[in-house]
Length: 349
Image (cartoon, rainbow, N blue to C red):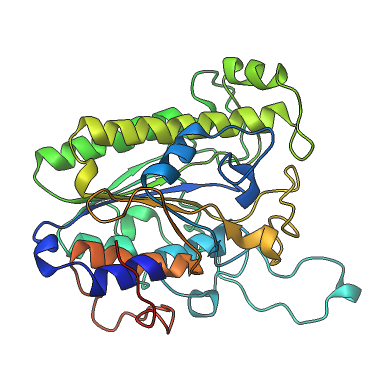
């Protein structure tokens, strides 16, 4: 994340890092750039994300490393682009009618290789408690489970996968059980006197869509917008947003807000169920609609409330940014595909 890495490296005095920051990364699944209230949806409501924008910094040009889940997440965790980790697609890259394939499909790996050092590995080595709550999606035959790739605590209430309809009215998509588990992890880490890295990886709003009955009723009663009008989609997003709000409230209740960096983003663009106009395209494509993401950072000790950035940022920027927030160096021989102009831009609080 080029702004924060530059900010941390240049403008924050060394004394500010006497205590490593806690780090919380909240990642939605298939949430498009235009889906959020703060980005102008005419039907969806995301009051907690809107509040994050007011209390932190919103990045207007943030990008995923890929147009769908697995390669995007592999880049996020490894800090490298797809040609390094070779996770290019979910499943096979050999797709579609052969007569229309213009290139020979590149061989694909089904998961993130255990030999690749992840951001969780690096932060664990720096003394952090590490936990993943929700979707991993990188443990195919070529990969490994998150417990083998740096995460000490692993919790997922949706073990059947994001496409499995759970039909739990009080916990659609496992949003609230994931949120509770992440909050308990933070509380335990605080009691142990350890900084923590919590990767809160929601299954929402990936299909199959689910929502609490009250949320669905709310949007069924609402007049449809010209761009967005699906009550179930809006209700699922509303519940996801509520999960974000509950997690932020838990951080405040634990007295951890001031020294906790919270980042919210998504793994790729919205599905064809939700228009991303004026952006072109959706999930699965590499036009703006498939890879441009909501992206908000909140850290009261460092980031000025209500600030904005037009600097392009990318998922691979998160690894070095989190290391900087931890006051930790990259592991020996670890390659990071960080942008080359990171120190050429100047910002101040």
